[in-house]
Image 1 (cartoon, rainbow, N blue to C red):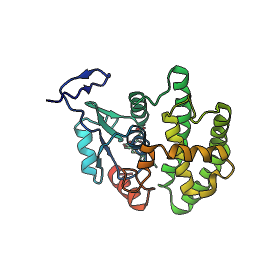
Image 2: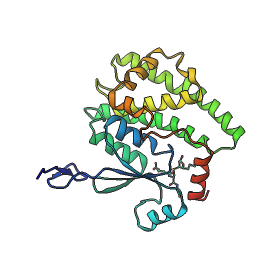
Image 3: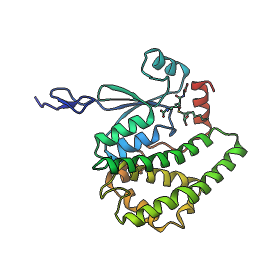
Image 4: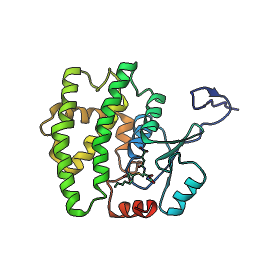
Length: 240
Ligand code: HAG
């Protein structure tokens, strides 16, 4: 019999139990779950299952069963734990898969960079819920903000750091999220990197890491940009 050690929530291995695949509970779209999908599939090469929330009843059942700490999704069931709060989940996964730097100073830089790219990506996620005219204005503002606030910072970091990655000399959660954010902004404005040569080279370099390249291929668990159907389902499930 093959003994496959299973880790508990604190990394202690228990022989005999096969690691179940993580299970993600969210809508069939990006929202706050997409960065979690990136970390699991693209960076760690971990396959996961998904339950897509389509009805209010599904959401109410998760709430009634007490699996949503503050009655919110994303919910990720992993290592025997029902994890909620996106940043807590991302931090847990980054630490678990050695994507969180080698010491406290690298880790806080990764936290600063990922908070920045999360802010940028959540602006895009929330814009999808605005009326058409306002949505287009919002997208234009986001592209401008990316080009004047976020991308110049990361271009300078790459220049000053002089390495292939944002922090240290290995892939981290910060690299992954910057690539995710670049691709999302390019969906709004394809030439957005025209003034950022180091970011263009970064995008090519990180996109070619095998597990990331596979995640960017059609047929992966990556989700498409939000459409009207996604917005309608979220509104119906959450009643807002
Ligand atoms: C986290 C939800 C409710 N701090 C938490 O995980 O980071 C916030 C999670 C959160 O806001 N979850 C939402 O469960 C769904 S996700 N709400 C129920 O009672 O609070 C959210 C973002 O794009 C996603 O679609 C959802 C609605 C966005 C609305 C924008 C106007």
